[in-house]
Image (cartoon, rainbow, N blue to C red):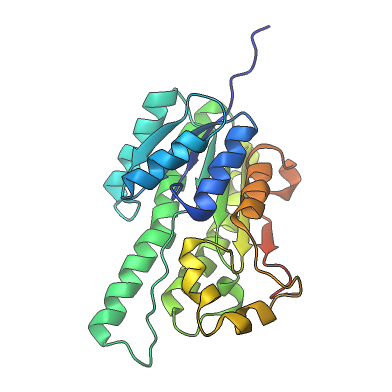
Length: 253
């Protein structure tokens, strides 16, 4: 009997931070990783070089562009012959405080944030599901945020985009379960990455740490472990779940 081929996983926003750690943990578990990135060629190549095993590849695309999403999925399938797992990790965070933003700035940030954080994952999911259904199943892991539940003081569009992605994942879990397609969501709090450097080292750092009973924020490695497990090993009965990976900094009932 021929050995099963390693799963092919597409990870968006994989050049740095959480995305890099996810890609590394997937590769350690034997997956072939399609590393998506937006613009940082150097960081993307560094991530590719850090992966265990062979057969991984880089793909550059703007996930806020529907046509680019279509090309991305088509290129991944052409390169690997199939697609088994989609990890929607790419996202942006930009201040849009209703108290200080101009109307034009408000509109610009909301459109860019929703296009990247919500419509990008939605479009990639649609495209991936077409391949999953042909192959008899697949898995999707969405990365959202605790902001989806607690709100954001100065980035309302970010919180809204993540809340919408939460319910998108749960809706698709219900819609696609019969097709052996499972959808999981991880909602992290503060994670020690470049994206969070200013908050974790600036004047408000003590306030951020005070929110965390563990005495520290989460790490990208912890996120990588969690997401790789969901993508490759978690029981199907967890489909539709949202895992709060925030170190008990925000608890919901």
